[in-house]
Image (cartoon, rainbow, N blue to C red; front, side):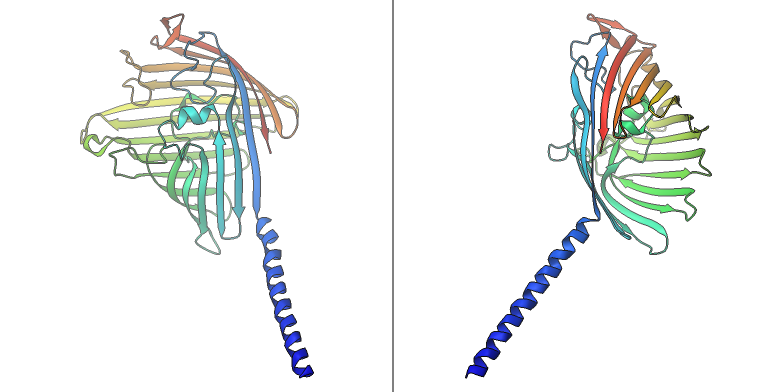
Length: 368
């Protein structure tokens, strides 16, 4: 009897030890999984003064970043979780700021603060062939919400009036030599998380990026689709191209061009068009100081992207210059002066329509 009792006790202890080891093993695996998750954050505070002193407080209806006059405000703040293994990747990020209020005004409340929410799977174990799906930054253009990564403090007119984000499925291939990247995109629309009401179509696009060496980068991106309800469907064709050249460690240039067409009516062979050229450059004075300048033009006579209710539509030149000071590796301080000059009186000063707008602003950003 004593032997049987002792045997039962040892068996019970064995079961408990096995359970404890199993739990401990599972618990030990959690930090290993968590080690694959990277946490990052970005914040961009600003103050902008418009010499026209708009009473509404909005700098201009076609600008979505840095668009509040005479306020200290948050342009864009973001916290991001990034998970990546050999054949799986995922991103989830939440955002806030005046950019969100202006640029995602048409999205449902539950989606407005989503910067990224996507999952990707590597389809080939030996090639860089990825399938990603979800909400992600747009493949169009060279400017993003992360202002510290671009040359200028404010965003260009072409960036402000082409997609910043997209809800899509994309197939991407990168060559082994890292020189080519090719992607195909199936999207909900022109900068849309949720499709417009009455629109049942999806949009398509492409991206081809070529970097032959450390100095040159060539990029081509497109969009084909409709951003209107089905009963008044107008097909939009849009192409963006840019060339970046790194002259040396101190000096770099970028040339960009947008070109778009849209049907004037459903099934029409008549099209409205718009285009936007841009050139910008940056010079590094030292490890901490940089200067940059930008010249741009945006022409949309039929008001497809930027409606104005004027005879010649939107035809505006832009000039800007900024000085940057890298306070620490994470913190960047910027000062910028910017002028916009239109062929039509599309701005307001003292309740009077004028054709020019001058802005002076400063920002401080932190990237963790």
